[in-house]
Length: 77
Ligand code: F3S
Image 1: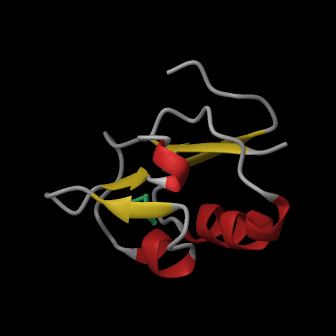
Image 2: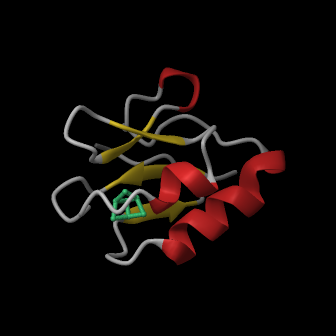
C-alpha cells in the first residue's frame, strides 16, 4: 500500500504535483499543495490506489523541494 502527504513548510507552491497527479494533490488558498484524495486532508492516512501509483511517483520525483512524502505505511501526522 502507498500513502502520501505534503510537507507544507517546504512546499514553494511550484504547482507541479497537482498538474502531475490531480487526483491526489490540490492547493490551498496560498497555492501550497496538500493531499485531497478521498478527504485525506493531507494527513497521509488514506491508501492510494494502485492505478495512481505512477502519478504518485512522478509527482514525488518532480517536486523540486522534495516536499512530497511517500511511504508504504500510513503516516502519523
Ligand atoms: Fe509544492 Fe512540490 Fe507540489 S513544491 S506545489 S509540493 S511539486
